Image 1 (tube, rainbow, N blue to C red):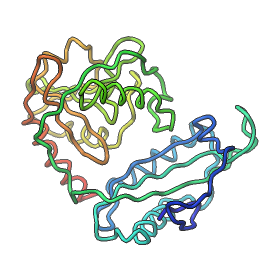
Image 2 (image 1 turned 120 degrees about the vertical axis):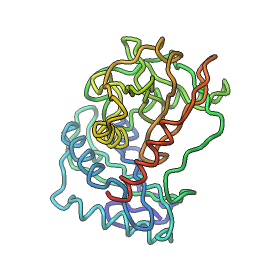
Image 3 (image 1 turned 45 degrees about the vertical axis):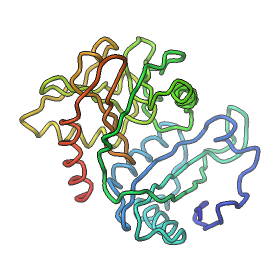
Length: 281
């Protein structure tokens, strides 16, 4: 089942048309959220990011679009999909309503909520091989728009095709200054000794929720030093660890980049802390 503007519909229901602005112009945002047994992980952070992103895109936020209202609609969708006792991936898509060309005739919005089952009720570290390469065909722009979880994801699509065609599990994206920004599906962290680096938002990386939570956690830990700093491609092969974070997987260790193989002790340590944070959220 899906939820379209508060109405539960079958997955194969026809409710969009060719004038949809998300389809025409990418005039749309989305949130990917993990829900376990009816508990929405980091819900306040997801909600506030969605509201801030809608304001940046000058979308009109409906009066009833409260945190409580959307939580209710998420849980209704999960129950209608018979997934209330499962781990669930929720996607909320918000798009500007039909009308206009580049200039919209309205800033009113519609939304869609989708629910799909996940395998594990908590974040699990996957120990298998996970090799990455740089995707250099196209670059991420620096600036505020690149930090938003918008539907303008063509670089991620092309990078995913490149990775699949060349036998990689993921690719790392570069910005116009040739700095490493993020992975195709999440934020990047680099570990060298006790120092953990992640690119700053000004470099164009996604303003990820899991990134935010890990940064807040690391700032309180005495055994690690956090740096939000640009990462050069040359630093990758000198790192002890590389890992990717997102709201669904949690932490994914990278095992190989070119000739360099990486360990995963820090990623495993932080994954335990992330699970504890999720349970308390």
